[in-house]
Figure 1 (cartoon, rainbow, N blue to C red):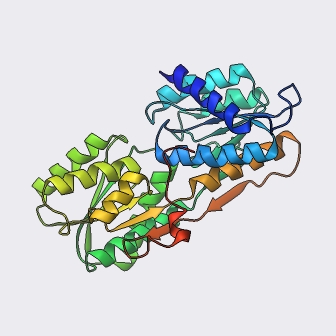
Figure 2 (cartoon, one colour):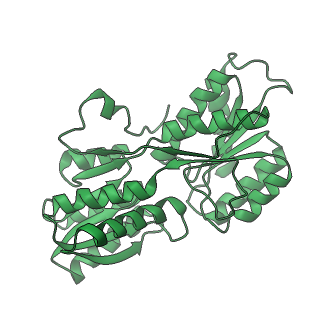
Amino acid sequence: MRKAMAALGALLTIAACGGQGGDAGGDQIRITLVQGLAGEEFYETMACGAKAKAQELGVALDVQGPQKFDPTLQTPIVNSVVASGPDAMLIAPTDVKAMIAPLTQAKQQNIKIILVDTVVEDESIGLSRISTDNLKGGAAAAKALSEQIGGKGKALVISTDPGVSTVDARIKGFEEEIKANHPEITQLGVQYSHNDVGEASKIVNAALAKDPDLAGVFAANLNTATGAGSALQQAGKLGQVKMVGFDAGPAQVKQLKDGVVQALIAQLPGDIGANGVEQAVAAVKGQQVTPSIPTDATIITAENMDPPEVQKVLYKAGC
């Protein structure tokens, strides 16, 4: 299945660049984007931004990604990319530790590495690191949830897995903001869904059984928010248990319209992808590269979601 997805990504890239990217010979810069999860709207929107920028700059872009957000599935994709020898690789690492070894091999082959969205602990990997300011985003989520639950009550955090840099930062920002400024909110800790919609739903069902007076949920990414929202809906807790989600895919936007979730923290994955291609091209050409590029996040509610400037930050399932 991964090979099929890779082939499809390559075909889409060729179609996107159709004849406008210069000649396909050896002088054309070749870049591969390795997503954290193929098919997820966040990463598809990132790919759309990367493809548009690649077409603009006349470079060849291939897009690949694992079927689960899992380093054991991402590692062989990285190894295959290294063997194909692109000039640069954009990658959203699926683990801060486990992806160091395969990316070190890529670096040793003189492939220019740009980290997009997530990072690894080895700071020597990644000529540029481009990501949402997730610490700030987590704090914004805490403020939004506190407002929704009236500044008091029990709050649960659901994340993907420990060791994913982006969601770890969101959790840290959320917890620090609650502790510092919202003393009447009781934090119930963090539970992990393994980025699985069904598992997130199970976690919320169990939390409601244990704490029937649960006031709020912070769902730290797209799939987690989808599963948590489904559980609240099935339990008849809409409007009683408030939820703030991170990301703004079609399912989350529908939940916002339906009152399942009260606020969304939308990232700018298209900008992350476009910036990644720009930095990769600069690195390959020996030009100056920006080591760190933080991108913004937008708080979306049912009241502010209609203006064009908000609509344009919603994620897409494809280009």
